[in-house]
Length: 355
Image (cartoon, rainbow, N blue to C red; front, side, top):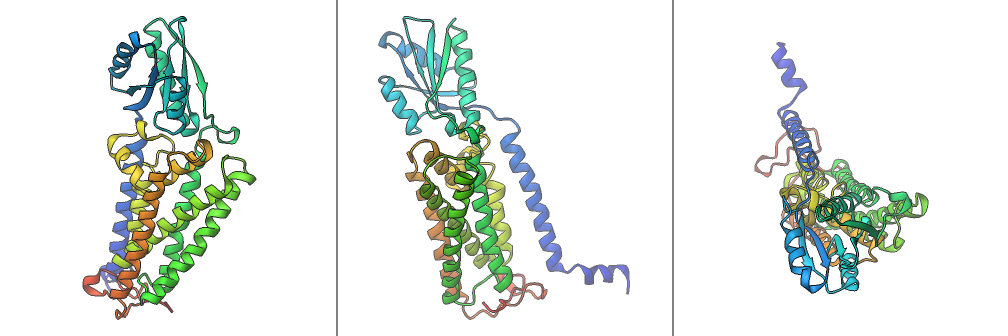
């Protein structure tokens, strides 16, 4: 037997294609994370100004025309209005101008992202210094002592996402990527739902009462966790129904490669490049991270949109999984590793082992 023959026997075409796919995911992973994080730059940070009417327009225009457009400036009626906008996450900073003094107050909310609050402070301090004024920083939603960099919410959601697609992947490995029929697809979704509830409860227990890393409602975070895990798991099941075992890689591409760096974890949305800032709110990691911070630091404000995003992923994933199982109920799947292609289905030869 020649060396080439030995290579062909040792590495099947199917294995070679999967390895090439993994290599592509690795390159995409590096490009995505480095692209999102290598040069954070503030852009259009929502920012409110409270100032006397005679100087409000001029001040708003000056702050809004800073080089690079770091601030998206709007006026607030008074301090209470500015505080409300901060607490409902409409703005990420607010400047309260005192015409009787050379010191103004800057309101920030570091619970929404420590790096973002620091960026707002740096931008405003420099702008005020140019006018021979200073600022006194007041944090209206400070990060918890155990969450000094406000990364706990992000890590919590990342853990839930990992749990979601790993659960779906294990179901595929143990019993075939594509359910044999609708009944078994529903069973998988039921197992995923039970797993999601357990994951939400345990994740919230660890991040809250055990580590004291994240404040907020325990049940609120647990419910969010169950939704995140089910959304990611159901999406992975749907991808597997579409592409077989390759669907696991597609789930990793969407959730890990695209979702994690655009989630607003280390750098909230206004500090991310345009592409990641655009896609982040529509993906489970971003919707989950925003919701977790809102529950922890903002009394659950501004979560309707992100929860709707997660619900859409969950429902769409479940529906696609069930529909594809119904369409493929007569398909005779083969066990992973047989090396026999199923043809146009792109399943790369899986057969369920008892599913």
